[in-house]
Length: 332
Ligand SMILES: C[S@@+](CC[C@H](N)C(=O)[O-])C[C@H]1O[C@@H](n2cnc3c(N)ncnc32)[C@H](O)[C@@H]1O
Image 1 (cartoon, rainbow, N blue to C red):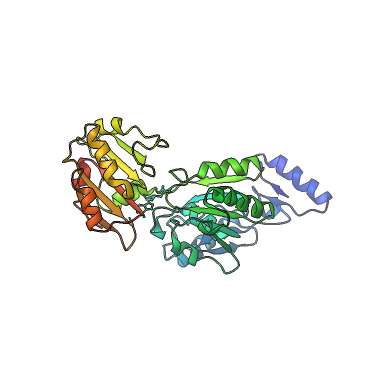
Image 2: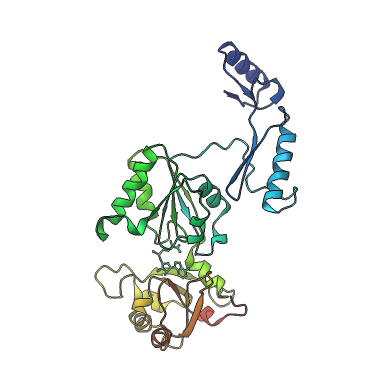
């Protein structure tokens, strides 16, 4: 039992009650009075630390921070990776945005949750090197290889998440970029909620902004562009399934960032020009953004399709359209 109210009398009564029931009790306000103490903990690079200093919480925390700093190669007065002394093991499913590709670009929270996972269900574009750091007991499921046909794949993934979580295992669903940016993350949240499985979502650095940034392209710039629109190019302009108003985008003066568009680049460039965008508008394609294989191909709306074909640009790639696509003071 833990007595952790801000009223010392209540904590004392909880302790007495626990004592009467022969149950160990932690007193959060007066650790030495309790019949049990909790350790100061930290997660550093996949290692769980727990420190007890005979009920002296401040000392436990100080020793914990020093050990964590040593493990992480920091000085002790810098903030520790985790300062949550009582953090219990998470349950259910965590949808974690893994960032655009470089494993260092996942959030601290995402990495902590990954270190506690029993099961990791990973997308094709989730940073692969993060999987290599997992402990051997962790079950890693490649979402791209979940059985069933293409149409069934999402349902099959939802079922795996729910099945493992119901078996009492903590599941991290590791996605590329941000889970909600063209990532089907909300469908997985809906499935977990409908199944009564606790679910939490950790934002990630989306490739829509992370890849241009890594290539030295600012998606906005004062006095140049006051808008940036992120668009899916997974269906071509004019396709009956397309929900994008390409004519309206053609009238924009700002930045258009297209995901999943390289295979339809010619049609997309033509649609923007048909909508009114000048055909000398700069365009940059960032392939494998933030990774060692990152490559930038540049041109204009008139030339980019031919240049991309000549350079054999392949997914994953981000297409940036607008004046900022011609900027690149600092490169990768
Ligand atoms: C299904 S979407 C997922 C987007 C992801 N949720 C995000 O926020 O970045 C996949 C598309 O994201 C883009 N993408 C993802 N990672 C990328 C990278 N490292 N470099 C360039 N584009 C990337 C590509 O356009 C790719 O086709």
